[in-house]
Length: 356
Image 1 (cartoon, helix red, strand yellow):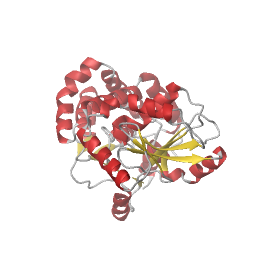
Image 2 (cartoon, rainbow, N blue to C red):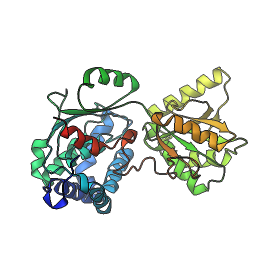
Image 3 (cartoon, one colour):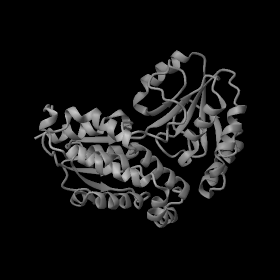
Image 4 (cartoon, rainbow, N blue to C red):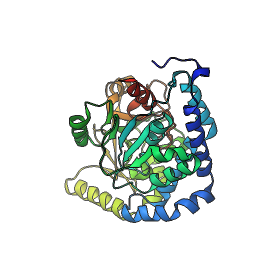
């Protein structure tokens, strides 16, 4: 372990955090965001119509909140006692997913704050926004210029973080298992309802479902509901809350396809306008659908979710009997310490750097 006294540590960690703090201050300024990102957002949307301007701006706003001064100060305090005495400087390859805008940012942040060089292989679906943020970070702190690279193929790295599907994870394991690594697979998110939720909580849950078209690993794709649950208030709120995606061509194509399949096969569904609610024991629902499952015993639900923890990214519930649950509406607003798959990325990077 990197156990040294605070006074002996070089200032790398806090200086890196200060640079990101300035970046966060820029992102908190709507005028700056508009001037810097308007053109690139439109270009990204033309290349990938799932990344609407609304959702790209929301992703940038979320990063701005993530990088608020108080959040970064708390992050520094959390790790100040285990900061390496010397700049660890290793090259970390990062292969990123492209399911939602700026999915690569959190790993980008962790690699650089930890004092490493970032070698990023961005998804072709999400290749425009992060390089613009990187350019601004370099303007704030020029020494990052030699620590940030975007590549078509990763090579000559010391450790690797790779995010993808279950299929790509097998590829990652084959090629990268000899390196210190974090290899992420598919995960899903769920909500557990008790029937006592307020309209505000149901509106927050609707956001957890529809934002980014439900394509994120933190997007709620499955509901657990008590027997005899009254879906009418939730269906009404979900319909109202998700109107911004109602006219999206590709989303509607998926939705109409699922409707046709269910109608032809005489399968029951509930229609919320932009989403179909379908009963299923599975976690991963197709685009335009949300699964639900009835329960009799909340403790049994908790046991199941605990057993399936490695399949889940986020659990929303108001009842404290559900372990690891978070409030409704937080799914698409992760904090700096909401690490994907529950693996502390910063700790991993420093541990990997310590391996000779």
